Length: 73
Image 1 (cartoon, one colour):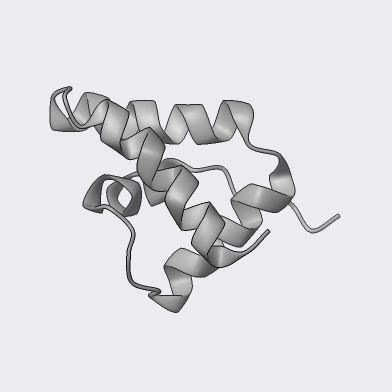
Image 2 (tube, rainbow, N blue to C red; image 1 turned 30 degrees about the vertical axis):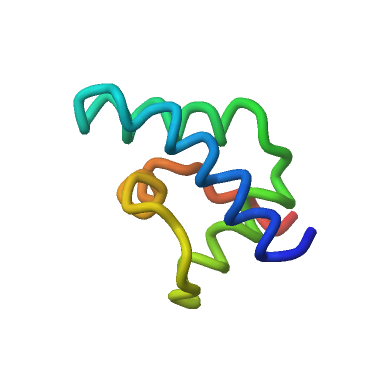
């Protein structure tokens, strides 16, 4: 999947959770990505974050530490 599509999708999730208190928004964003994104998508999103690509909402960046990194196996 293209990085732009991943950024768009992650930002949609964050936009939904931005109406919640910050900690709840972070947890909700990470939980949604962990529960509904396949490992390949999570791996790609984390790579996009590590590259420092622009365009991600702050809530996505804050949630990154709680997103489960898939194993390479």
